[in-house]
Amino acid sequence: MPFTPADLLAAWLLDAAIGDPRWIPWPHPVVLMGRAVSRLEGWLWRPGDAPWGRFWRGAVLWALVVAGAAAAAWGGLAVAHWVHPWMGRALSIYLAYACLATRDLDAEARAVEGYLHRGRLGDARLRLARIVGRDTQHLPPPEVARATVETVAENASDGAVAPLLYLGLGGLLGWGPTLAVAYKAVNTLDSSVGYRDARYEHFGKLAARADDGANWVPARVTAALAAVAAQVLWGSGRPALRIAWRDGRLHASPNSGFPEAAFAGALGVGLGGTNTYRGVPRRCPPIGDPGPELGPVHIGRARGLLWAVSALALGLGMAALWA
Image 1 (cartoon, rainbow, N blue to C red):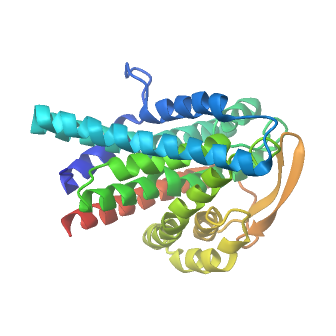
Image 2: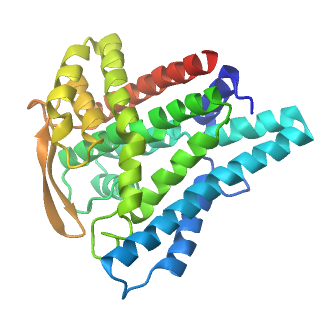
């Protein structure tokens, strides 16, 4: 199933140009995955199950969604290529584009940045709540800025670098964008059921662990690319690498800490601290060296670093397809 460097570049440029606009008349593939997870969870969840039973029902959910997404992508591409090679190529580019989220992440962060610049703290908190899981309704401006920088850093990996790497690897293996679609299914499952609470502690365990595994390499590649980009942009590549190595393992997640630490070093700021989730405070270790109070300017720099990292990951993906 052919997928060329030009196809990957076209998908990246399409994401950079339009993101995920509301005027597209069909549901986004990730939205369809989320609906499938919700429907299947309703069928498989049993409140009276023992922990082991919940784990296996969650494993069935995971297998059905990931296999279903991969099979749908593979089958659709096979049919499209059979109808006409150009139709197959167009679908390949569309699926690859749908796996990317650099522009949407940038747009959400830019909106928060703009509200903070204009002193509209309430609007900034509401907009931030769309992209973070923590409670935002009482955050002061520096904490709004910190949360935004942290989510830009974390999602630079699973919204840009990881899909681009899986697109390159999948194309190299002759699978087209199927591998990246499967990755997005893994990521969607983690976002839907991969929580450590009474409902999902066992039911979502496989989803959470699979997402950790799928993001292990991309998260560390993201940190390395952030250091390269920071060196080019501001000459701060060395502190980005140093802090990624020193603090990347401090995060509760086995992966999120590496891009966050690299961004902290690149921007010269401290991240981490106390976050509140559904009214319950959770202390996160400090990441980065103490720096200035965070504000809109740091969100803007994080956005610039995001685009530089995404472009470098595009280069890696294209190089894999040229191999």
